[in-house]
Image 1: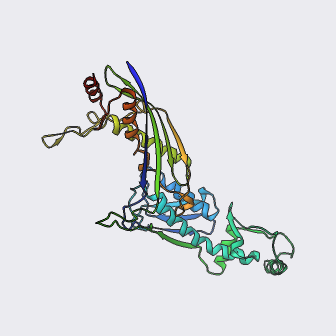
Image 2: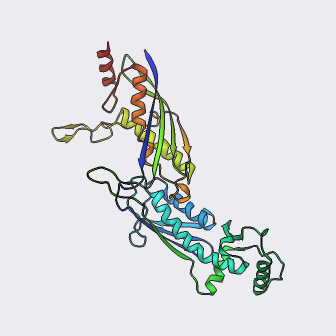
Length: 351
């Protein structure tokens, strides 16, 4: 007989190293043609950090992502960014890149404000342009100041000079010997844990998630099949939603393998499962439909509100599967993996 059950598990996860210094640095150079060079020590090991950091730089500078070139993880030229672990790079290196981009942008914003006769707070960068936010509430003095600036630029007073291209603004900076270059670094505000009380602030921000799993258990063989997974993850702000979905789906697949298949066996001091014929991993045929739900609760300290999603994606899966097995057949498996022989043995004891 095959019985179905549903299980749920939730988790919270601290982003970054635990109560330890956790810095990352970056350089951003806004070049003459409006393209951007980002130098970061962040190693992209498949998680998509290079794309996310390029997006952060592009968004801050008001250029297209195709205008951004990222040089990463080159110890000869890039600043330290720490390890690509603890789901920390989007949050920490992302902040460093944004800070560096803000510093580079400040140079051209000042030039644009001068050219357009407004304050730097009135300038917004978008679509490769530096544009005045609004003209509706300008005073007469400001309008007169604009007219003087227009004359200085060779324009007829009263003509529309509400924006200037980033490339033209960079040219004006270069004519004055100014480089649009920025650097930034970020270290989360944390404290170590008190050895006696365990109190402290080990992380600056946390990721949260809940996963729900449906399983089918064969009571005659003990085999567990995962039918579907629904995974809701708070990522702060999804810098690249498709990448976030990929992280969630990949994490669920890893969690499934951890729950049902993967087991390191040691015999007489030797690893008996040293290859993929004995250490079993899930294949595409083992991975069920996964519904990824992206929850965005922006982190105040994150770049555009982003946190992290790497490791959190796999944490609840095994617990949710174990709970679903219990819901289906009423036996609790307390050691992983949940193999068919373990389930069958528990069912036989249950009578």
